[in-house]
Length: 87
Image (tube, rainbow, N blue to C red; front, side):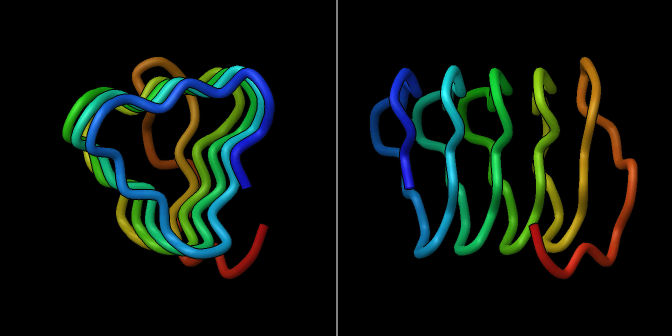
């Protein structure tokens, strides 16, 4: 689901059941894997992969890849929790 106001760059791959909340910006050539969740106003820089089932917190700025089933928060985004199994 790509919500209103989300901006998706060129050559971005958005997986099945991924969610991009309002105000999200995803830079070019990035991947948002299946069941990943990118919260309100988060930013994912160019060529970054957000792994399967991962969660990017509201307002976070993803400057490096996010491992599957990991929650990241802050600016720059850092791991807050791993082993996330659902939204």
